[in-house]
Length: 147
Image (tube, rainbow, N blue to C red):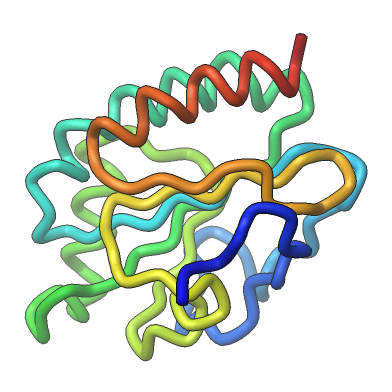
């Protein structure tokens, strides 16, 4: 069953690797959190990456905590070098976790890429969506949280 609106933030435990940091980041309840699942083999993920970057540019300075979790869809997606290449290609500067064992995805009861989980200031799930159409609604929810 998918994670329901109102569910508390489950954390980020279980990533096989964190890129750019030594350990799983400690996110602060009291500020909105956006968890973004993606995969190197996902065409829609690549198409929507510029919008995720736009949200990062607008909302991270206002207090948004953005974490992108690479969730492989195929065995070939587990090659971390491909993740590094996408990070460079798409100018990803947010925190990035690699979830080769799908442990983080299980915490979020997530099977999809791209997928978005937005938590409010109280650390409760405000909104979840998947796909390119879902991303359009993430923007509206971010606007509400930062209004």
